[in-house]
Length: 439
Image (cartoon, rainbow, N blue to C red; front, side, top):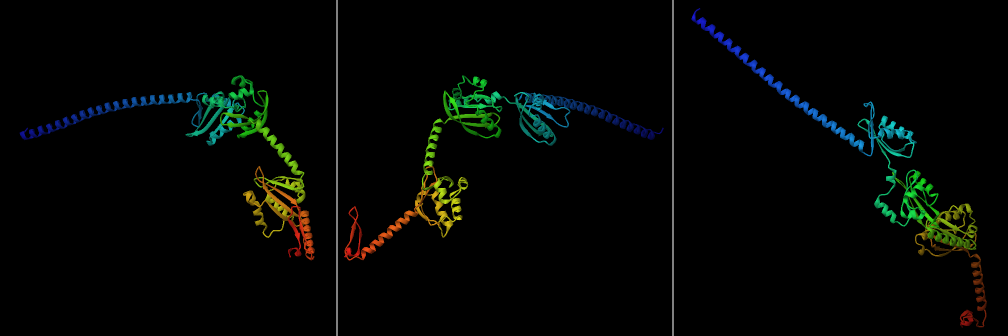
């Protein structure tokens, strides 16, 4: 083979070997890189699995802690929804809910649960089991699920005041007691125990003692209507019959607080005052002078027989306690009032007396259409309002007019005499004389 041809062949072989070496080297490097990448991925996967296991462990721990907290709380919890096969319960929620559904408020509880499940309507109510235990239920929609919190009411704890308040109530001189929602006595202060003769609070609770039998009915009315009720009753306290003012106040989620104030002296004073008022009214009713008394609100509070006769007004109208303004309007309609140029202005002036009684004329003369003349006297009433006296002075005015006419006639007659005439009264003062006497 010629030398040039051999050299060319040798170069070609060398180049092929170099290419093969390069390919082999690249393949080895790629294999090494792939191995390293796989090893790295394996390490990452291991770390991810480890982190996932740790996260799951923490999640399970957190869920466990949550469940433990929910189960340990005062309120039990039951949760359900479309995606849950069975309700999830915490504490004794299922047992307490079943007890409520078997109690007297079962219909109400069932309706509330249905409304919560179907429409997400929240509710809060109190229900009882077949016994006397009471439960507070609160339901609401949470994240597309229905949740109901249930708590059994601790009647004894709710009924008994705290130590500080108990000490304060014990220091009060008036009886104070507490009934639960079933109207059972739960507590009474020291004054209550003394008034009822109970040896201790426990003895009073066991015997369900009270100051008066009807007090429990008053407490029931306060509970049912949700408002304070007051009444005055008579009870025997320490062997004496005393008048007591009872007050029953409903307290949310607790019961009814009762108290009693001894008002025996007040009742006696009121009775004596009423006796005086009745005697005074009886005396006024026998007077010939018409009397009408109006209160602070300008309403008629009293009238005697003479007043009804004077104005010829029926008792059916007067007993409705018309106002002074209404009475004046009625008399004007019947044409029994003096004619006035401006009746409304005259009426306003009369009614001003109620605001400023001392500025109003205390006496006036009314010339009424039937020919009578009335002397009208207005004066403040001790209990507020005004007292009006209507006296018929028609005859008195007529006599005074006749007397004055007679005096004028006598004076004219004496003036015709030429002799001087003078008349002196018992007091030595000149009473009558004629013209000749002056000369």
